[in-house]
Image (cartoon, rainbow over all chains, first blue to last red; front, top):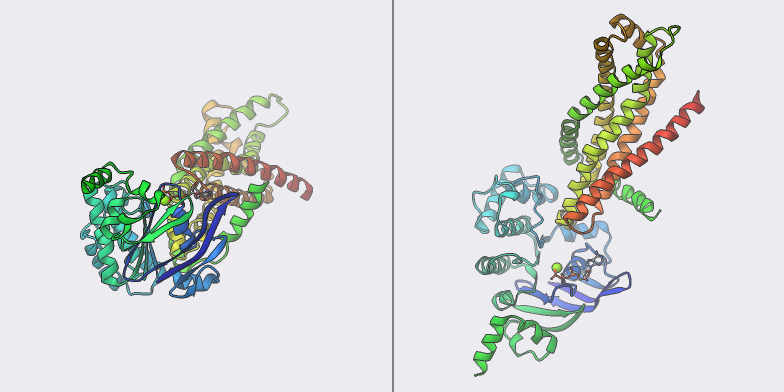
Length: 252
Length: 245
Ligand SMILES: Nc1ncnc2c1ncn2[C@@H]1O[C@H](COP(=O)(O)OP(=O)(O)OP(=O)(O)O)[C@@H](O)[C@H]1O
Ligand SMILES: [Mg+2]
């Protein structure tokens, strides 16, 4: 479980996040959604410590991360896996070495056990056999899947995904979404997915936090998001032509 | 001014909390190979020509029949060892290796590879930059030694081909009144320049903000800034040398 309390963050005098609280449960796919530029990525980066929030707390299973010293943070960070918006694979090494990287850095597993583990996770993301390919030889969707494999290889307890399906076609997007959800349930981890894709929300959003201009406007799940009354959220949901048509049809 | 402060903070982070020795050793070896291979050809070509040109121009300037011709070789030796080898190599090196370092780190920054390292709890500055600085520290002086040899050889070749000096005179000249301190001093310069080029280029690349365009800018400014820093350091060191004598 991850809990955030009153997170605020400004860059210069530009307020990016104000007073955001929320709880992300274990074994569930939690989503943070909102329009471009509302501060979703900044919030995610505050949670993993790539940015320091100006105010507020982040707790990992009741362990205060924000005010922890370097060594305590490292303990928590070793339990974190993160999938970045563009995959962020190390482009000078091949797929296998990419996935192996966290194991080399953070565990003292023997070499053959590492290889087994790599093959297990690559298999899990449907990429068995691409071990020796370089990141530049992969398609966007494959990069994302290698990114997921790298994020979970170290038995992470917390998985962060920044826009896992941006730039992917609808079918591949759904595959990635489902993969994330399955992994979350299978390993019983706490997953947070940042997205602005309503499709993903309806697919996997067991907990959904909607952000608007740095504030939390609404929280709930895919089951009750259509009934939300907040204007900003409705504008967001029905910005999509498809959704508008669905709405018109259903109100007939 | 602000960026100079940031540069020193960056150096502080780079040299603190490094990871395990074995990881770094492997990275260090990779960097050595990479840095050496990527610059050896261009440094060789440039230094051989510089030696050749220096010989011919010195011959051209020494018109007095009172000055023995072996002095040409002596001048070539002192100029290349003391000044041309370290600083011309620096400029070539900044253009080749410095820009490489900056664009590599810049790309890693904008594609969030640096963030990925940080999330794993790795001190990315030290993981990525320290091996580069130390590898440069080892490789650069070797390149300077090579450059000095090749300049002197280039001078020999040009002198013989153009007929301004005989082989005997040249060999005699390059051994004449050799002050060993010039070699030591060239090495001191090399270490200083190596550090400046690798750390400034890393700094520029590491803090790239934006996209592909900014990576290009970071790489260009890595070259200009390190060349300026090298020239300033060169001047200060020359002053120091004068005061020591
Ligand atoms: N390092 C930074 N320095 C200054 N401002 C920043 C920085 N990072 C992000 N911002 C600003 O914070 C705001 C929120 O950015 P953020 O990347 O969190 O948006 P987002 O919600 O993730 O959008 P998207 O869906 O496009 O990824 C933007 O206005 C951005 O300009
Ligand atoms: Mg974002």
